Every structure is written in C-alpha cells, then in structure tokens.
Image: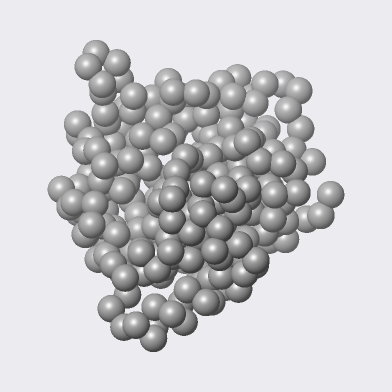
Length: 258
C-alpha cells in the first residue's frame, strides 16, 4: 500500500490556531450531545475526528460553520470570538470551507455551471473567476466532465466537485464530513492524496471526520476520539491506537493501523 502521509505535524510553535472550540456544550432536549469539548484546528494541520455514530462529529462541523449555536462555550476564529457570527461571515471573513457528507452542489447544473454559480458569489473579478475555475478543473482532472450534470457524475467526481466548490473562496480552514463514505478503494486513495496535497501546497488547516478509521488515520497528523459527549483521547495515529480509552470506546483490541 502506498504511503499517503509521509510526515506528520505533531507540535505547533505558533500559538495561534485557526479555529478554537472552548468548553463547547450542546443538548437536544434532554439528550446531551457535547459536554465541555475543547480542541484546536491549526494552520497547515490535518486533524481527524473519530467516534461512534451519534457522538457529535457532524454536530461539531455544524457548530463551526454556524448552522447551530452551542448551549455553552465559545468558538474562536483567529482569536476572535465568532460564536454569534452568521454563516456567511464565517465563510467570507474567516475563510471557512465546508464539504458536507451528502450534496453540496446543484444537481441539475453541469459541473462547470456549479463552479460558475459559486464563483460569482465569492469572486468579484470576472478574469479571476475564470482563472480560478480553470485551475480547479485542471487540478482535479475534471476536464472530461465539465458539461455533465452534477447528478450524473460518479461518487468520486461529485466529491471532487464539492471540494473544488469549497476551495473557490481560498479557505484557511477546510472541513470534510464523511468524505470517504461509500467510495471505492482507488477513489479513497485519490481523495487522500488530494487532502495531503492541499496541506502541503496551500498550508490550510483541514479537519476530517469519517467512520473509515484506517483511511482517516492514513492522511491525518493528529486525531481525536469522541465518546459519551467528550474527547476521550487525542494524539497521532500511532498514539491513538495504543490508547486504552480509545480502544475501549472505539477501536477495540484487534484494530491494526498498518
């Protein structure tokens, strides 16, 4: 198996994370989802989130993007408390890009029409829009399907499109929700390479959540494991799979990374 992640960033000398969640708590009715959760997304870091179904991984993305608000705690972007900021300000002012698990594109528009529609919102200059779109199409090798309706694209092509849409605004932070779900092995490897290239070429902070633990751990620097509303373990992939709490709550005793 080819090595996707040839190096891992485990420590950051700059004490200025792109995103900080501080003492975040959230309940739906009487059901507590998150209980005093704290973590950072750092510049140039790939962070993974793991945990059982319903533990709050997608909820954390919804909190970061502003789709929902916490019951308690604060969300900081570049040391600015943005807990009350609306979605569009988080996207434009703090450059937050989001790739949802499902959808994220206009089904009945072609791939090119999708890119043009979002680019017109995010990029004022027409020449810059065209240049950015052409660059992303080339980068993700989508030239052959630019005139195909998005709903007719393959799973991997759809995922490439949604990542390209998220990159149109030159995000400093990219959130990827279940990006490996329902994809074949070769497509997953392709996406892993795209993610690692984004880190090395664009130096953006990336946060991935996925149930495919091996695929996620193959391309992250560090990861957290959520269970019972809290972060129960955090560290590099090799550290996590040895962690007693992570084994008990998520990996089990037989899980092997390599």
